Length: 527
Image (cartoon, rainbow, N blue to C red):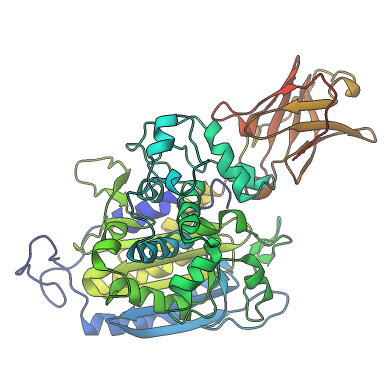
């Protein structure tokens, strides 16, 4: 998942902070009476729930008609029962096979919440605790602050409070590096204040999960199946992309159809194995209904005292802009907020630029949950459907045009990246030097070696195991390239600047890590 494509934080803020409480104290609103710490003014009544469920087909149809998203699947659980499970549209626009409740989708960052329940099961088995240091079972793991690296716990990683900057390590994945290499190189990343700074990332959670897997003596993917998927009967769920790829009833990712309208099957399907604990789960809404039922009512499958910290606030994620605004928080792999009616909202979204938009929302106080999966680049469709449903269930009406609001928020998130994105090329650029003068090997501890080679008359940047990036002259000793992977969507563009014996790659230099130094000694390039 690229640096922009885990759970989108702006979406999480919208889930808990927009709008006011509609209605009055009649017809579905309850008067707090039993426990001021848990009571809410709003109540999910049988009538409102029935109406919310009945509205789902029309809600999905409207969202699909407005956006053209090819396929959607939805499931609702309430008080231990599956109240709705259905698919809409097609798995892919080329084959046209229908989506149903058994269709398997990539979940992207919804994987984080699922993985947190795997960790909770491992804690119940006595393998670790939330307070176990990552290095207890992953002794080679380190951060740039040795003390922080030695003391960061599994829980701190699952709460994104290690001090790593937002999406640290994702760009290494885009370049083809494997999980172990990425985790090893996090030691070069500059840190924000430890334990007090929230920085949403994939590889902090991946490091914690890898430590838990090492404690169990098995691969994370196998541990997830043994502790969670198999016992819950989640037969269509896996943490390996190869399993998703082998499914017959599988949704393919879609991206916008160029300058035209509509969607096309992504020419490259997202393969998230390197960050599997944070973004690599695939599942159906039928399986996820079983998982939501368990989270809402563990009934001994996971002990309450172990699961509770995951579902409750551990660190603030957004600072309110006014004193009247509600805050939002992160637990261990879950977003947590207070809804306008007073019910706690536990949720997570996921997104792949290569074609996935997913979300779930749980209202533990109402024993209610909804999951929505889509097979197109995240544009807010999943969140809008889920939010409309929870509005109807609580308030009897939708409190806003969620599709428009989420669409606007996601448009900003989907914007091209790179320091040259949206910048016009110089009208009269200074000529470049001789092409041969740029050729050579340039070294960098975090990104690994970069090799500049001549292919015909064109300069090409080879970076990481898979990065082969043509350079286009920009101005003087500055060239332009399109970043690879999920950070390299249409319109994304970065500079490659040669200054003496250094090469600075703009898109990778946001945190001061993008300078490469020419290797003047003969060497063999390794990824």
